Length: 350
Ligand code: NAD
Ligand code: TYD
Image 1 (cartoon, rainbow, N blue to C red):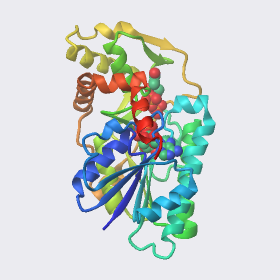
Image 2: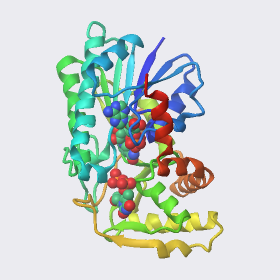
Image 3: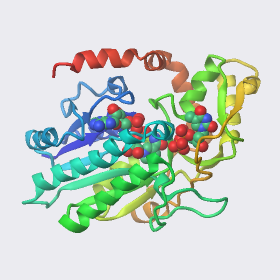
Image 4: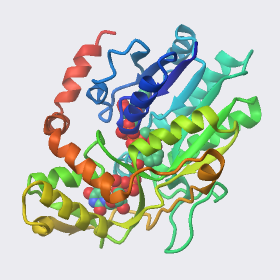
């Protein structure tokens, strides 16, 4: 029996990965390890929490003794590591927690895996989920490939780059069976409303200002979160040990163009005149060190494992806006902080 430890499963992408894998592989046990920071919300997993092949464990990935206990208690045979601090703006305000969680936390997990598997690495796998931001910022031309040199520019991307280097170092030095992927910006249900798309949907709904950094000319490559989860499933099961796979949407948008499209669709779904909410657009001081453009070349993943995005952006965006409008209670619980009180009390004494 396989026992797969998924870290950060109560977060945005992690909850989609947990849902997909728990439902698809009924004969595999999945242990969702999450410390329930502000970004972790077990309500994201209400629909799978009762499944017999699912367990939740509240723990901090930086706690080595606890990681050792968990590997032994659950006989862990594989890891899909998503737990991280993930928001660039927070990394600018408080870089230390990013170094702690992303670098030291990843190192702690690697060490726990290496020690637990050291006598038999056969069939084991440590999958590290990372970001395209480690490659730095592009000008208007070119794409990031798996061989683009690392050039992180924000405390967030620097901490993710540090974690990626440790993962590869453990493969090179200890032969730990690792695989790494670097993905572009995700969007979809259950994303914390500090990130562009859910923040703006919520603000449009409440007629609040839409804060656009600089002139809105930065470019991001957007991928629907369920397509990322499918790629993770594929790479975890079929990817080659020691390899890196870039994941992207082949879908670049200048922020201001995306925001205008978002406004049109949201206005239509809210029964407003299309474009009426454009008056909410508010240009504000640019983010410090704001990366101009990210663009992923995901040809390797397509060529070697046959993956490609399943949704057109317009379709994915409409689905996403509709989801947030239909799930206002989820949004209200997150913005009021109620989700944390509930689960913090529930797990306080465990
Ligand atoms: P998220 O912020 O929504 O979720 C992170 C999760 O990690 C939360 O559930 C949080 O409680 C948990 N966590 C944080 N610190 C922890 C700790 N010390 N111990 C245990 N759990 C802890 O993040 P996300 O957007 O779902 O991103 C998941 C992963 O994917 C991250 O590694 C991120 O770098 C990467 N990634 C994200 C994107 C994106 O667009 N969101 C794109 C590419 C890669
Ligand atoms: P974000 O969702 O924070 O992701 P990332 O910084 O990892 O790409 O931001 C996406 C883009 O939107 C980025 O160029 C910054 C911009 N942005 C705004 O203009 N206003 C905002 O309030 C936010 C959160 C982001």
